[in-house]
Length: 346
Image (cartoon, rainbow, N blue to C red; front, side):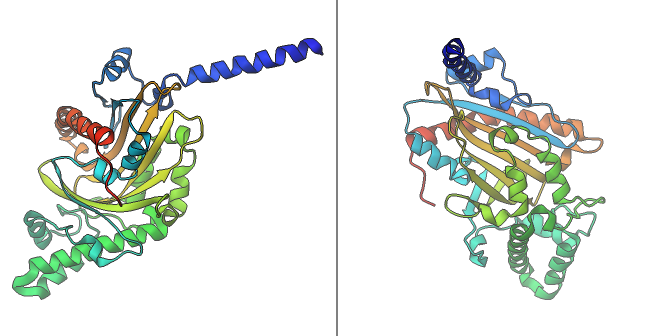
């Protein structure tokens, strides 16, 4: 027994050492989906941004990007920026963005407008063949608005569109993606719930950082609305030559004590007017066990309608080329915000 009592502290110490060693590299939590090569780890520690595209089949697109942050920088500032992800992700392609209030109000969407090309498309499209991601009922509703508005039809459609966005967000808060009707922009309607489920099934890293978080959000999205729980924002931005209006739910999650994740947020797309049937993003600051190095990490997975069909391979090549060319500058801008500028007040 005395011998056993002597060995017990040694055994516990060895277990603690093994556990600590397993967290020396904070990027281990992203395995097996994302594995950084030694050269990429060295680049990060030199301050060079790293961007990779993990394998994603079918209509899905995955992007992992990271950049080093000076370990001496104010950790509270980084935490504040992660909680303002709609501002952190600002780049030259973002035209406007804003948060929804609680409760939702029509004035929340004042600057969320369709461009002229979208207005013309809505006037002539039909369910199953439309360039804007709307449900069949929404397409018919907006076309009735056009028929009754006369020469002022453009302004009438803008008001009708904002009302549709508000209804979609309200429906999502009541019942998550399952409460949203199918988009009828293509011949085969696409369910937002099915599209997001497909994305979520391929984001295993969340089960390591925050097990069950997506199931919780699906059961009660409204529980993730509040100063420390989350928020919904809209954005208007340029992507692939089109102006996209989208709505996104951001979940603010507290990492477990001792986790290499210092702070993080999850961004869940509610809807977008073009290209994206579903999208899931992680914004995080991770650190080494000894706090000697810290990194901003962005993980993005989306379902893109352009990646389907005969031209899917060409579209994927064009999209990935654009991501690789634009990504490093966007990461550098985000790092500057985290290290030199205080986040704006909500």
